[in-house]
Amino acid sequence: GENVEQHPSTLSVQEGDSAVIKCTYSDSASNYFPWYKQELGKRPQLIIDIRSNVGEKKDQRIAVTLNKTAKHFSLHITETQPEDSAVYFCAARYSGGGADGLTFGKGTHLIIQP
Amino acid sequence: DGGITQSPKYLFRKEGQNVTLSCEQNLNHDAMYWYRQDPGQGLRLIYYSQIVNDFQKGDIAEGYSVSREKKESFPLTVTSAQKNPTAFYLCASRDRAGTEAFFGQGTRLTVV
Image (cartoon, rainbow over all chains, first blue to last red; front, side):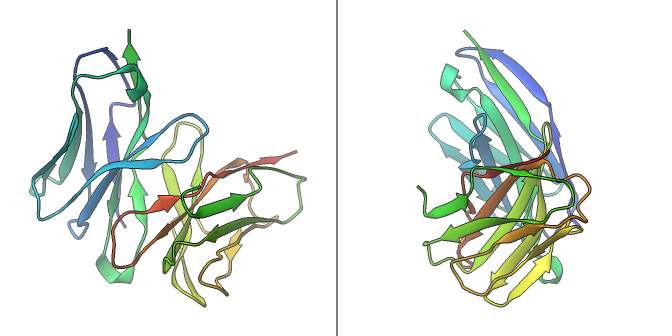
């Protein structure tokens, strides 16, 4: 099965600076990589995703990059704001053998310092 | 809210009892999923169903059971065989032709 590693577990940045969260995956059959933001006690919400046929995707202050060869992908948040403080999860979907479901990393607690 | 509803929001269970968590969606999604979330951990897949009357075990299915009698509903039963059931349980659904999974608000289960 798939295994997703996420780093760092905690990230503290000054407001206005950039934040980068990195993930690696193990199954080369995975072809879909979403990022979710979860505020305390609430459900995860999709913020950006990327398919394996694309190397980079950007949506305003958020971007995701994917390196299929190295099997890693990263979330980049620029010009961070206090409302960016949350736990961020990367995930990968494996498609081999008819299996389904997302495999998640353990999360990164992003803290934006005023 | 978001078309996928979980109930109850909080649930307390005595040791040795089975409890059932409800998940209903009106998004006409074929696929539905149950995840478990523990503090400081990512979400782990318990069960999933890609179509009515069919479901598959995820990574941590032991001590859990599900049914999928209707497209809209995918209830999860936490049985007495689950030795550490206290957790936050999240249900999700997805259109099989799409990619994004939509999550419910979650049920926080506590064993007392």
